[in-house]
Length: 356
Ligand code: MRU
Image (tube, rainbow, N blue to C red; front, side):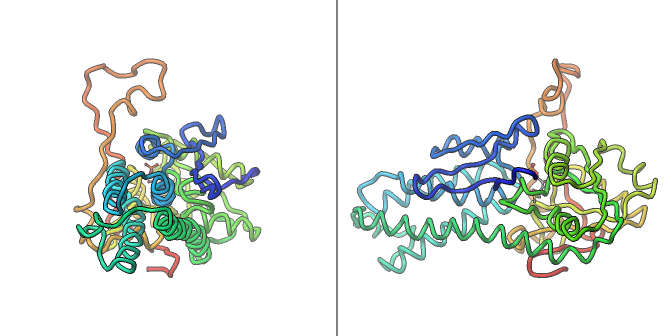
């Protein structure tokens, strides 16, 4: 991007979280700020902040921002309000494991603190007897801020490492197909699927990237095509139903996508349409690479069948991009936000730690 700013960040002087409102792109680059739980929930649920890693980092920064504003007489009051906010944010979107992962990391930090200082975990009754004075508030703020900023910074390093590990699968002159947005905007800075692409471009390779439009919310058209164009990469946009035609034309050498959750057997939940892309790619013998931070891997889930798939409002299909309803007003709409791609269709999963 010409004017590169991070997707989200913390102002640690004012304890406010800032984020790019992705629903306004590519028309306008709008940066919003928040200190409020309802706004934070809405930002995630309405995809103002979206993309699995970005949602996780946003939730971590949000919990710190909320925590410094929690009132209460005792540490027990603090913890119960903290947990109410955390559980509410976690319910905003179910499929991306990074959201529950990041909130879990913050919770573990809080638990470590209460265990260390008071020999009592966050669900212990003893905390009700501990006064929440200014010193305790300061100590809580210190550990939670440190953890939230570590999660933010790690996202940058992890995405960079995914780029370095993925570069070996890109060759000069390649045509690369990508689906949805697993770019800068889905993370703090480099993206996952786009990270090897940006690196290849930086190294002077001539690559062409083909972005699926990604119905119904058009993350490919609005976000991926935007950020790649701003970075000076040769970019083409096509509708989702043009993938087979594009692959048949011989212009695609590899598919690079991100993911929202990987089950223990390597099945991958990603934006709706990904599994169709992978099935077609297999037909044309084109490799499919999934770029995933290890925080997207959920070893508690055996196969993709057990991944909860978010169902979204039908108006995203029938109304959102039209001046008036474009279908019969009573038609039933099927609108799952994600699908599961079988591990058999995936050539490799590229993480910050290596390639599986
Ligand atoms: O519904 P979204 O826009 O949050 O879906 C995003 C995707 O499916 C991305 O491909 C995924 O989160 C990977 S992000 C690096």
